[in-house]
Image (cartoon, rainbow, N blue to C red; front, side, top):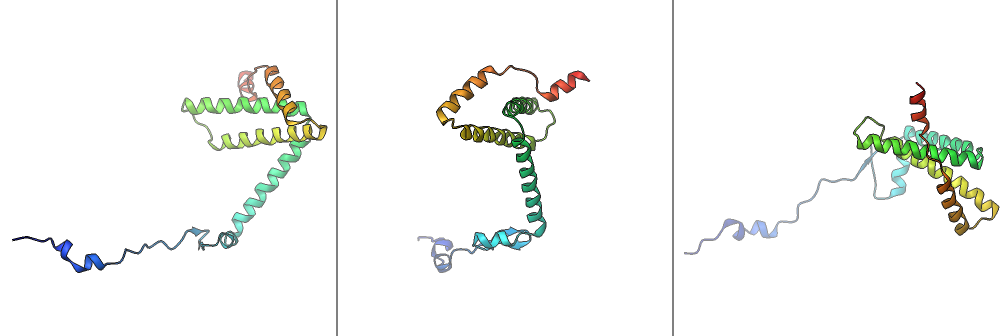
Length: 156
């Protein structure tokens, strides 16, 4: 008297095809994205493309401003921005209010400044090894001082 379960003996469970998913693709900007990445970019709304163009123009303007600085000004600005970045990390660890986007903005600005500094070194014919040696000397010569935002708070 063997009993069999209905699930094991049912011919429907054996021959049933795998369930189909309802996934029809990603939606980008209100339009369904295709499997071709080039077509998905073309389907972006005009507003998004205009915002990207404005951001690029701001970036170009910032680069022109950075290139207009002297090397000493660049180094001072990098030190100040690194101090501001340190203060942001302190605020985050103390769970104080801060803008999370400031981290990326400051890091990118520091990277742009250091890139311009390196471009100038390349123009002068300074190779990578000597550049790193000079960079180490510069970092050791930095005098620790409070960042500009702290200096402004002390004055008030």
